[in-house]
Image: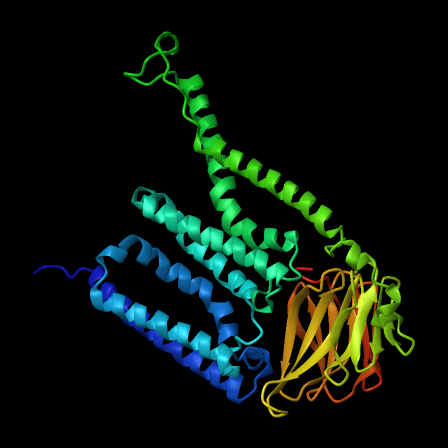
Length: 447
């Protein structure tokens, strides 16, 4: 009688256990989604991330890692029905994006996100998911691909230039400095295309030289003397040296572009033409006779001139409009930046939200805005010189910290006192039901 293999029952149980785990995970996810959105479980954070844009920020990277490598390696062998299904899915997503902006559909969360935001969303996941297969794609590159890539790059450069000069607000380029562009493209493009090939070439060359020095030539390989006597072919430039050359060329281009920009527009990015220089300084809202100061420090002042709030101060080419009275409120200034709440309504007064902005005065760049949905109103904001913020809200009464750790709620309840909110020495202070409380407040993550 043949003995029963103990591995057989285990091999049958493994798929059952995986199926059971998948079912449990799906049920748990459904419970969390219902509790987070319908039950408003604050600890899930779902109610504060209820748009398609929020879920894209969460899921795009894992989806790209799971699908793009398969498409790159096996796309040629994919079933026609699968190809059609993926194409239809992309078309449907494109239609949702278009309608999300045109309608606009609140649930998409696309309104307000510019081309710059989409580049930041898509670029890194795409590169991470496909970088390991770039070397396999090189033999397939033809002259047609080079032409398409060149034309696309030219159009992109033209779009960037027009986005700044025009300026086109939908591009989101205005206000982004050279530093912001380096942050956007350095990791996704410069690291895999230039730094990694150069580093790998140097490492492999060093390892080969060490092997030759320790072990000598392998069997059948010419000794060093014979190699020295043989006529040497013209050396080919290694990939690492080409990468270094590209990096140096990019640095030279950046330096030349920076110098040209400084000569053309001045150090602060504003035009240095005689026409602008001739404008009288007294014509600005900041110096108007009836301008009222609402917040100020040594570098920056927020004033109300007429029905509009303006930020004025050092390093600014012109006053920065923050919004109209009734829409902008709760101003705080620190470190050359102004923090404030901007209330917007998409459809009359029924679909409103409050956006807490941290704006740099020198160029108007907005860092990591935080949105509060519905009837939530911002009662007070305190800001640090390094860009951290503490925000106290009403309806519901909550205190939020916005710093390098991300948005987090640090207090809640009807006893919160907005007038007590203060910051000193890395700590934010407030009173709740008459009792003093405190918490750490760090710097902004990307300021």
